[in-house]
Length: 430
Image (cartoon, rainbow, N blue to C red; front, top):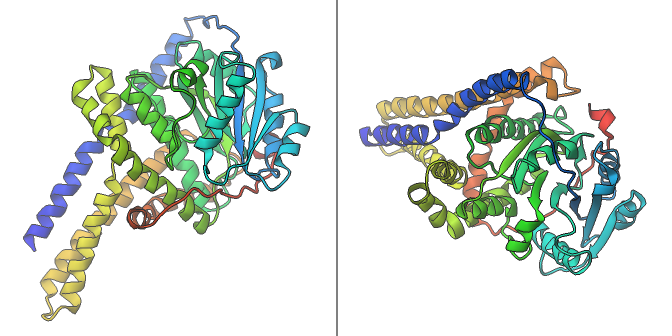
């Protein structure tokens, strides 16, 4: 019995020590933003070059939402002659391609039932561009999901950060449907927290940020160097991030470039999506974990932090947590239903389990609360009572990751599209 308690304490202590640096990131953000405001008063904006961009959109049966995205690209304050929207209609069975053409996009259609997924679609498109306009026609590509909407200053902001020398960078991921329910709010708060208190802090410290699915920028030179898009694991965005950090390149962050993303609203959709994410993380650990973790001791200075930070991101800490929780539950059941009724064991294990759950819930609650308060102006069309409610349900949403992390170990997972239905204009969500 004492051994179980000591194991719980040891594991919780180790996990807390490993991830405590992320609490430090919160302080970095508050201090960094204060310093930035003071400096901005005394410094003129640097001159920037007008670069040529292609907004790359991989779409599968997205005719209901892709038109709204393309309208926000056409409405950008960035010079239109330096910006193209390119859609890869990937294995579509609807009129996504025609809708995209009607809204001014350059469209390529791809049909391949064997190589399924966004990574293959991107690789196909980059090859087509290389053979067509050339792989140096665009200075950079911006990868965007078909359900997104872009703030009208998105590319203007992207260009300012790109001109600072970052060849790869990510942007601020807001939500189209924050207020729908506790599931969409859970996703939204997580991505806002990632932008504000992870990537923002990393940018301030000069370490590497992490690409997250959509709204990220890649210089054409990077695509040439890597021979297209050779990332085909279930989470190709994190695979790309890990490979970039392993090779010593820093990924930047542009907080002024905001996009609005549609989040799942049903638990079945959420389960499918997060199952793919969990399985993809296991694939990344298996394929890249050794090289990534070695960077913690072999790289120099700030690159050590980048390697450590990303190692903690992809390592299955959730699985370890689930193991301890399962052990506590088993011991509790033995105390209740075992051959000998042991009230002392029941009381001890209930206390241990309660302490674990309270600590886990409390840390996630504080994470959600700080994000909700600091990002409140970016959350639109959500009444106060929902904001309060979703702050309390945020930890519950994160706790549902526990069974997903376990199931992903044993299930075969394949890429499946998530149906998008929130057909709104930018004005309707702001």
